Length: 469
Image (cartoon, rainbow, N blue to C red):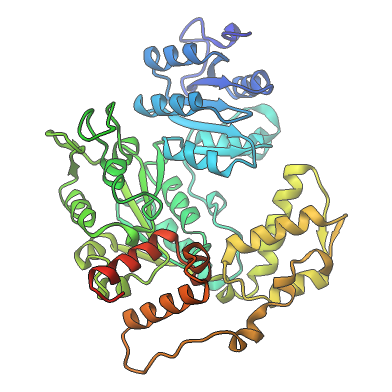
């Protein structure tokens, strides 16, 4: 087993250019040596190891500015390494399998700056490392000085000819270099996190962590600890000190997704952090500086959430310094065809395939309303890609896209809401009617209603507390 590739460790300060950067490369795959040779050819100083304890030692003693972690499968040790690298303020790039979305999210939540799914190109790796690569250099001659070039090509926002999306791209480029808090609103699947990542990438914090946290996916009992951290012994089960996302994102960007799902009592604490730029861990006495840029997002109308008492107006005002409203896919005229081809091209590049759409298949995709937006379209393209033999035709498009059940909606069960009823009353009526139809099965009801289980439980608890249930 190779402990270190000695030829990549500089013997003197003059061996590399002044612009070279020290990278720690930790590989658990067969690609480690090839990756090291590629990065060395780009004038990076590299330390290579396949041993966990040696990687820990290098991180603690040399404190390299960047960790490149190359993996084939998920292990707890890799997450520990990411966490340690984040603690020494390293940029963390994870290269891993394309079919590990859950692990990719874990890596990012532990402090990884990028998760690059295989296969990766030389250009994509250089982009993640923060260096600009010219066309000649893409062919292997080297890289330019590590400078940020906020050109339109740097945006990861999916391709679009829609005037609405072009305006949003212009807004992103304007707001990214500032310190303004950004509030993104849009239906589920419209690409809110992609926009947040673009804002981070074009900001002065681009070389620091981008840490996403879904406020609706964490239990109310744990969310304060996840945000602000806790001291050892501060509550039952707190067997060690824990750094929250505000600390793990230090110097970078904290993406608070589904912010309107945050419990009201925690909203008060978040507001104070935004106002004072300081916070305390659970069970801690001292205050810690909140050196993060906040980007928040929700799939609910924030003004409605305020009116119904689910979200604090003062917190909304504090977050909504620069609002961005993402349109649903059905309002992005002409984009379905472009996006379908974009997703298919990515799959072809990933698997070395050469599959294309028939014109009839593309027309079917364009005729569908896409209630799940980009996420649904991407999943449908992937399913069709798996089933196709060289060409995606009508036969490979799922039945619910070819023949959506919308024409039969009026034949199913229905509820009546009187004119003059509040939105809250209408919502309550719909929730109980759906539960009735699902024979009390909450998971099935939540799927039909298009809400998370947490949201459904929160609403039922509110009704019970008000003796309305």
